[in-house]
Image 1 (tube, rainbow, N blue to C red):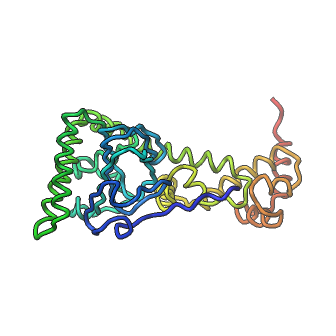
Image 2 (cartoon, helix red, strand yellow):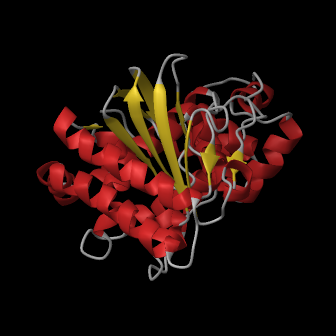
Image 3 (tube, rainbow, N blue to C red):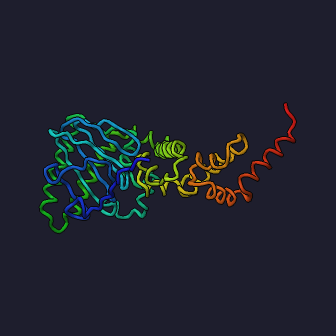
Length: 308
């Protein structure tokens, strides 16, 4: 299997001048050009220069006058054209939602009633937050106010910045209220998780014969972070990645044993085990009998079933 590029997770201290809130344009530091994730919330605002954004498993247009809302730990990348103009806002969960006690991995499950501020972040993979010029002029004014307040921090500046930030998010929520409420009613975040699980399961099926199949590879192929995939698997299946892969390999092995005459060495290979001895040990542990005995017993049972 080809090596999957290492995907970095950034903390606020690595990409921001302050640990609570930070706003900048592209002149402050270069944009990240490869898929990555971070521990904090992020909003990107496109002031000019049409491009696309890859977020989770979705690829969405990112034209001028569009905002992108990125949850913590969500794998993403937005290409910045050389002649483009962008503003980026980083902020911590404690800054925007100080009373919300929630693991960042579970933010998609927080109801709109409890935290309406999360709505655009929860449904970014399903909706494009593009504003007309008049609406975007309001956003631009807020950005100017934020930058001025952030550059001259005084007692109370944090509260002022939080107010501007909530006004920005609220403006988008008001503008896209019908779409956001419809997505919430239809449990779009559940569909997103099902789609992600489908991508992971497809990757496992395609690479089941590779003994080197790893959580990191499957997560990268599904455009998820390994931490998020681990959390998602626990939530959706109750299993770890390793347990899931072994279960799929055992299922495939049973199919080969019951329906074919290939030698055990061949079955071990196509099921992703490095050698026949290891395959036999794992199969015996899972089924109580070695694979050869399982095949004989299955054939004996089948011989007692009269033909239709």
